[in-house]
Amino acid sequence: MSETAIGSNWKDVRDDLFTQEEIAATDLRVAIISKLIRARKELGISQKQLEVLSGVKQPVIARIETGKSTPQLDTLLKILGCLGKTLAIVPLSKSEAK
Image (cartoon, rainbow, N blue to C red):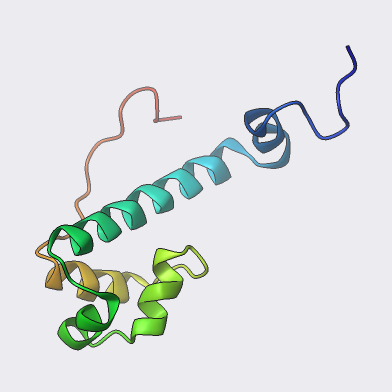
């Protein structure tokens, strides 16, 4: 059985291309944005309605939700505040702390 030049699965490719710090940062961004989307949908708020509530333009919200841009902290806090959420600083689990 021969291996491909890139790797045999996404985990192998990801581990070859990115550092553990880059992977952890990406995983954290994905988790935050996923929770933001979930909170918006649970409240039944469209991106356009969130624009009105937060003052953050709908196209910006769309780019954040699709991962095409990384929001500034103040932008993220404006959006989360309107959803009744905030960020918290909590200890990493031992398996995440490296």
